[in-house]
Image (tube, rainbow, N blue to C red; front, side, top):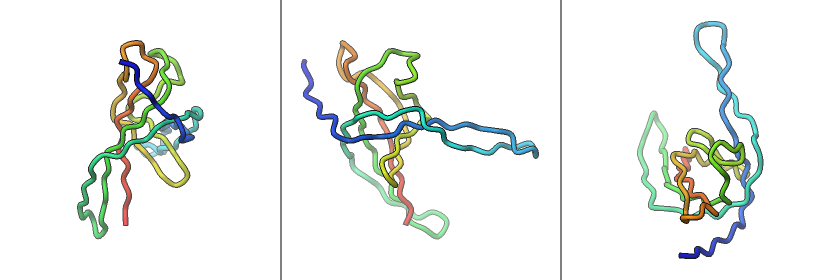
Length: 113
């Protein structure tokens, strides 16, 4: 099966860095790893009230060009994609096709309102 994928969205790939806060905890900061072109497909979202605000969760399928396991260009779970003010947390990564030309990053966009 040959998949036709249109990589028309420019996303920044980020990884969390945890540093000690000196009090037994840590501070989490995000650092840019690189920029990838992607295709984004939205799933069916949900909405829930949490701590005096409404949180909307939308599952997203983010498709990017393939990269070998271990490559810094290959997204991993717990990293995230950024597009402007939007944040897509990566939950899992699998190959779209048997040859590994494309990767599917199951992600979740959360928006608080």
